[in-house]
Amino acid sequence: MKKIIWMSNIILTLLLLSLFTILITLSMVLFTSSELNLGVEGSAHMWIGLEVNGSWSNAAKQLTENHYNALVWLGLIQVLPFIIINIILLRLFSLYRKGLFFSAKNIRCFTWLGGVLLLQFVITAIYPALLVTLINTITSDELTRIIFISDTDIIGLLAGLIIYVIAWVMKQAHQLQQEQELVI
Image 1: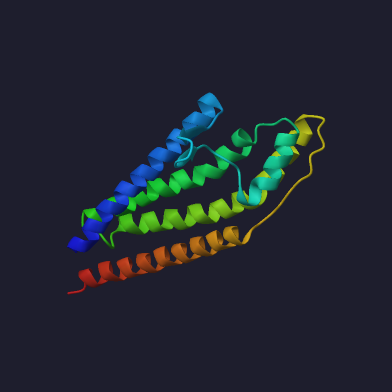
Image 2: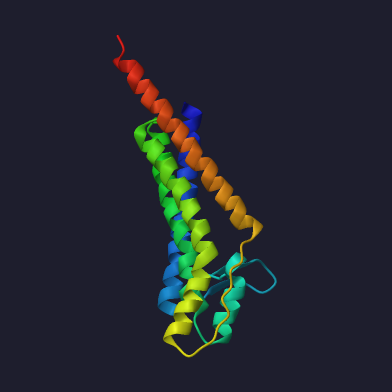
């Protein structure tokens, strides 16, 4: 029990650091439209910024070539599930730190986590094509609709399904435990 609480404290610290970094990056992109490069020549360098990568890199290239800000149209949407997942994990590990392992709150965290991962897959698959359709409808541009799903996206889908099933199993076990407590 002490090990779980100790590890939960470490993970909470790392999750807070991750969320803080994501929020700083988002604020830099939104308010300054730039990136931050730190370092001294001949030594280590650190880059803080936002880039559109993975399945959306082709759509980002096409938007940039047509003078649209890919970071705003794609990058912010791409990072939103990571923020939500980070917040859910913060909640889950704070429950672990309190010694709550199989409560209804934990089950809700797992359900939300699986749901967000599933939603992320759907957004990854259809958002760039919907965005291009919207741009083509509003403007006279003729951008090509791109639907691209990578192996990483499929792994995210599988992880979401697995986590969602784990939440369902935990919910069933929790209901069975409550029913047994009522039996005399």
